[in-house]
Length: 139
Image (cartoon, rainbow, N blue to C red; front, side, top):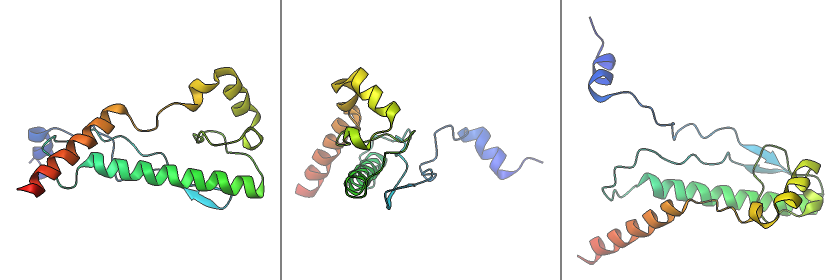
C-alpha cells in the first residue's frame, strides 16, 4: 500500500528547492547577532502574490545587511576582526579584516567591494511587483 505522501510526491514531484524555512545559523559578531545570508527563492509562481517570496527575500536581505553594518560599527568601537567564512560588508575597514581578507581585498580591490548583494533580476522583479500592486490598489 502506497502512502498519501508517496502518492502526492509521485503526482506532484518532490521538493528540490532549498527550504526557505531553514535560515542557517546566525553568528554573533562583536555582540551583534548577524543572521545567515538569505537563500534566493526558487519557488516563485510569477502570479503577483500579495506575499511574494521575492519580497520576503528582499526583507531578509535588508535585515541581513543592516545586522552586518551594526556588527561593523561594533567592531570599530570594540576592536577585533571580522570572522572568516562570513561575507563582510563593503564598509569593513582593513584594520578589522583578518589577514586573509585583507590580502583578498588588496588583490581584487574594488571588484570585491562592489559585488551586488541583491541580484539584478530580483531588483527588477520587485519593481514589477510594486507596479502590479499599485495598479491593483488604483482599481
